[in-house]
Image (tube, rainbow over the protein chains, first blue to last red):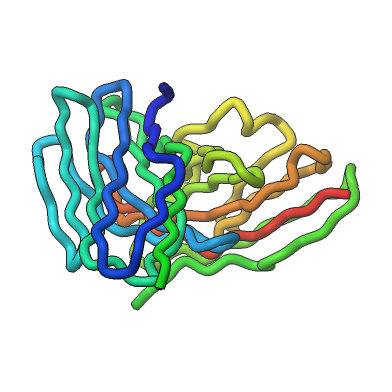
Amino acid sequence: SQQGEEDPQALSIQEGENATMNCSYKTSINNLQWYRQNSGRGLVHLILIRSNEREKHSGRLRVTLDTSKKSSSLLITASRAADTASYFCATVRMDSSYKLIFGSGTRLLVRP
Amino acid sequence: EPEVTQTPSHQVTQMGQEVILRCVPISNHLYFYWYRQILGQKVEFLVSFYNNEISEKSEIFDDQFSVERPDGSNFTLKIRSTKLEDSAMYFCASSVLAGGYEQYFGPGTRLTVT
């Protein structure tokens, strides 16, 4: 898989359930960021986790990072219909490059 | 809350025409970026800009593309002679510093080349 690949590609859950999305990457990273994109709209920054961090929380979001497995997960607890969107992980490599490398994203549908 | 703004939201142009996409980054940010997203595909990095010069560019960012910070607030992406394959959503982003810092994205400009 390429740098920053999410799975599943699509996820459909009922409102109130938890949603878990995973991201895998290949190279050593400085940090990993999760973004949300509503259909045809801009990218909203959700959370950044640095390579020396293992877990981070923000409201209903919980992100984990396992650098030994080169993977991250995003958990959205008590999902709402408004959480329906595509979710992308993006990595910043450990070298001098500052660009974000995006995955293909997970399309989340939260059914009311 | 400060945000990145982009104009226009949608631009339709004919093949071979020049387009300029405009962005106003967050005011205290020092690093600026352009990304693009072809419909149904991943978001791809185009270029990063710091201290009035390009710090990194991708293979996509060829001689047809240029960036400029003409004044203290605007950051522009110019495509000199558009091609059909340039049709995409173009996102501007900025960050306070580079590397370990969040990049904040604008709402995007949808470019349609006919």
